[in-house]
Image 1 (spheres, each protein chain N blue to C red):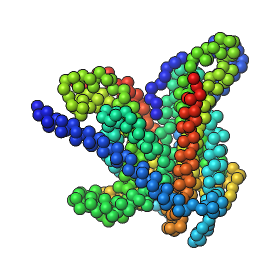
Image 2: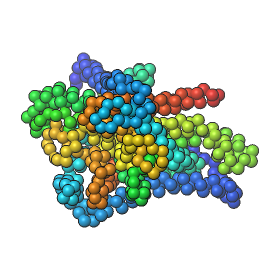
Image 3: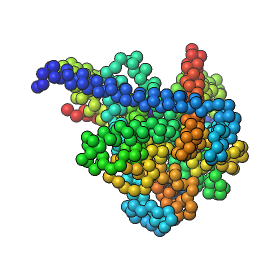
Image 4: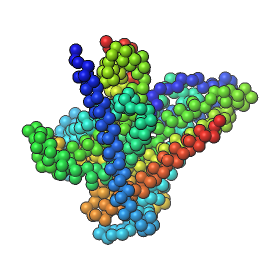
Length: 281
Length: 322
């Protein structure tokens, strides 16, 4: 048997080591945040938000088309992914206690771990090959597939949180099940579902890998779904691995814009959650 | 990430002959089945695109040869498999002790208020897009590795083949280190959830026997949480295997197999990211899709295993080892 002093010493050493984990985890975060802020801020100017990318070898220009391109691709993704994901979530909550529900739930869980680049290949096979060109639609399909599993799982949880008494009250008044489902249960869960959608959009906007060979990139404006489209994330990648220091600055600037976008979406999701809980008595 | 499934019976439609109710039920069913269809589509489409190559080269030759020559149309996946495994192993070795220590610190050792203060930045870390991590890795981490860490490792552990050779910063070590940072929040948050399910009575029993806090963790908490922490680790591993952008930007992109961790290599997702858009021939595309298929199957199996383990872990083992 070791002495008490030795055991106490071991206890404090291990506590110290575990506490050091906090520092190790937080330092990279601050380093990333500081560099993106300091280096990104220098790259921002009016042109950055309004101009097209400059040709190789010239400085100046901006990433305006990439900012709108990201919004465009994510918009397409939402149009496909939100009805599917939320619908599947409602299915899981309302009718998901059978064997089919179990299978869908498990599939959604496992799908959320599929590497996003693999989803890119699938969108390539489904959209790019038949259309014979890279397109915003293909990028949207890839992001939609990524949104579905997380949306389904969070929607299920939110719908299940709706008190059973609300549902029972509505049914007791003779309101049919489908109307109860839509007008009472979903309505109550709506705030939470909007929050979940915002978080899914934030995640989708930060994705790069599935866009590399679906929506590709574009030096110009594009608003037709069947053409290659620029996105912030792919632009960051291309600028970062280029040999030009002006493009490196642009990459940091674009990273700052991306972080503000993603962070803003997550933050508004948080605020929404809070105000929702404040409103319910 | 919630692990427990609330098992409350949703109100079922009692009158089946009610048409609108049936239509509503059916449309919900269609949306649910759509998730299954998406999963099947992923598998079938990958297989469809990859088939021409697997039919001519054969799966076993594809995964066991190391020549990747697009011009001569020879495709061997071994360098990418090797790079993926090595970088993920580095990531786990670095991230596992830190995240388990962090989870223990937050659940067992620190005051609750501190917990809230620390878990917020960790959740932020999980939300940073991977291309931003790649940018940071390329311009911050790689220079640090090149100038400080790699020379230090070469001086102290240079007798090992792992730490020999030219030190350029870009390579397995850089990719593994950035992966470690990226999987840290995943493992930590699930480990915290698992540790929370350890019954208080176990801790109290150990403390009542005179155990110190660390001894309590060692003899009461960790044995109970073992399966769940293993599950968390496998989920982290799954994320590391499939992580694309950050790795692509710092691994050096060289389709070779080297023993040194300082050497540039390649990983499965990285080669997909770099070559897929410019795939020159049908065979090249097929070879890349085959790499994707391989990645998909491996991460799928890991995810299934991890989910099962986390479920067992949060339920607790049937009998705690004495």
